[in-house]
Image (cartoon, helix red, strand yellow):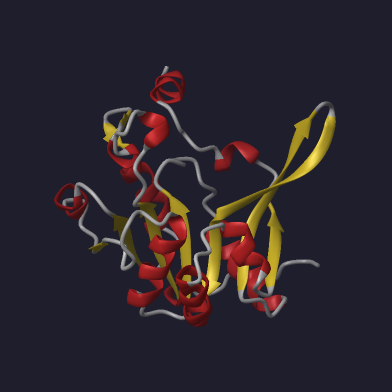
Amino acid sequence: MSISSSAPDKSLITGLLLAGGRGTRMGETDKGLQSLHGEALALHVLQRLTAQTATVMISANQNIDVYKEFGFPVWPDHMQGFAGPLAGIQTGLLHCQTPYLLCVPCDSPFLPPDLAERLLSALMQRDADLAVAVTLEKRDGIQQKQNHPVFALMKTSVLAGLTTYLEDGGRKMQAWHASLQTCEVMFSDNTAFRNINTLEELRKIEN
């Protein structure tokens, strides 16, 4: 299905930076606060996110005062116990004052500048609850679809269902997506969704 050329109104969208994890693959450090070219990873993401949304908030469970210095509201998970990114999204939805919430991870500094526009266009045209980014990845010489579930835009009305899913013990992002009317939006640049998971990867990108 073709996407309309008229850009949706970004005033409809709140951005949510997901920085609430423990950073276990980065030696238990706070990934969002690791330096890339002299600035925290989270700041690189925020610069791209703020250009696409009406307002932004941060999901964080540690170093909250440091994240507050970036100039945006910071919310720890409503659900206790580091329940994963869905708990951060639930908290974001609880505080969202716009019809739509766009979530992105704090360790992906190259996110597309048209991410919000394309996801919202698809969600509206396909009458979906949630739109998620996908790319094509080559594995063993074969192009295969790669879902990027943390790069998602959703209606705030999904909050009740997400809360029930979490309270029932659900933690898997894609399983929750499967319970919704979800549409996929294909992006050609798979490097835009690259996650920096280790300090080695971070230094490699920096060099």
